[in-house]
Amino acid sequence: MADKPTTNPEAPAETVSAWSPFKNPVFRALWIATVVSNVGTWMQSVGAAWFMTSLSKSPVLVALVQVATTLPMFLFSLPAGALADIVDRRRLLLFTQAWMTAAAAVLGVLTLAGLTTPWVLLTFTFLLGLGASLNGPAWMAIVPELVPRRHLLQASQPVSQSKLPPLRHPRRHPARRPLPRRPPRRRATAPPAKSA
Image (cartoon, rainbow, N blue to C red; front, side, top):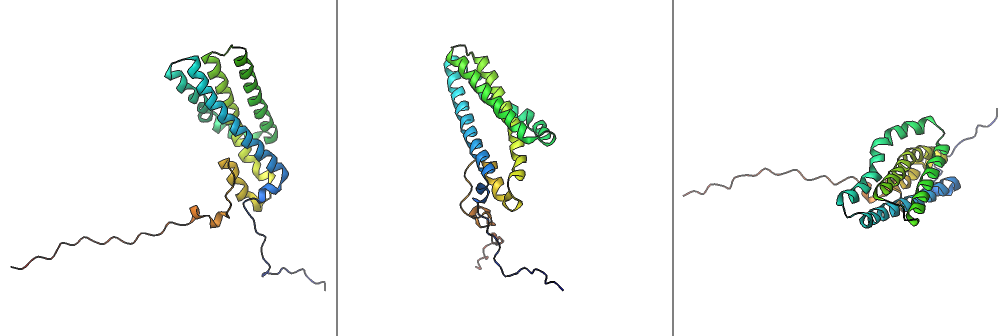
C-alpha cells in the first residue's frame, strides 16, 4: 500500500501581506498605469476648471466642467458594468485607455492652436469622463483574473482606493476593529424628597 501524502496541520500557513498582489508583474503594471491615469485625470479636471475661468467668467460654465466629468459616471456606469461582463475586458481596457488618450491629445492640440471654446472644453471633458466610466468596471472585473485567489482581498483594496495598500494586514488594521460597546445607560432617578 502506497503511503498517502499527509499535510502537517501544525505547518504555518502562507502569510499574505498587503503587498502580495504586487509580486504579479501584470497586476503591478496595470496598477501603476491606473495610478498614472488617475493622476492625469485629476490634473485634467483641475486644469479644465481653471482653464474655463479664462475662457468664460460664467460660474455656471465653470460648474459644468465638474458636471461634464461626473455625469458620464452617473449615466454609463451600469451599462459599462454589463459591457465589461460581455466583451473581452482586456480589449475594453485598451480601447478606453486609447479613447481617453486620443480625447486628451485632441483637446491639447486644440488648446495649443487657440481653438478651444467653453463648449469644446466641456465636450472633451465629457468624452474623457465617458472613457473613465467605461474603464472603471472593466478594471474592477479583471482583477480576479490577474491575481491568485488568496491575494484577491489584498488586490481589491488598492484597486478600489487608487492608493497604496495599507501596510498592516487587513484583519489587524485598526480601522477594521469592532467599535467598543457603550455601557448601558442609567435611568435618571429623581432626587430623594427632603423630609421637613
